[in-house]
Image (cartoon, rainbow, N blue to C red):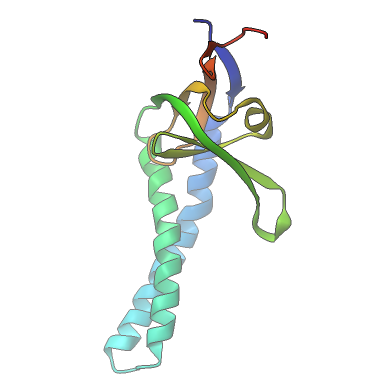
Length: 153
């Protein structure tokens, strides 16, 4: 069964480093602010509960992204094979473009616009990706809705 390459990101490792460099300073700042707000709450300032909760949620989200990127830098890419169960698109924050996603098994991957237009629900794919961020390295379609990839109707 021939495979058809749908997408390949040659700069995948550079994207991972960029993600880590972008989120790590924010994680340090957000975690420090969370600790300051928590300390203020513990010393009797009841009004600090709002800041503690809000900054805690932000710190958790930013820390998670930074740690995921750092863990991926120390790990090897993985391969996931399966059927495309669903694909969808949504607007980015502040309407700065669109993001395209595919669901393979229980994993969600962000794909480029060409891959989003090429893939349909039911396609059998093989995705090479980073294990913690699910950053896509390459996507290969192995069959389309029960037909081998590369066949023409």
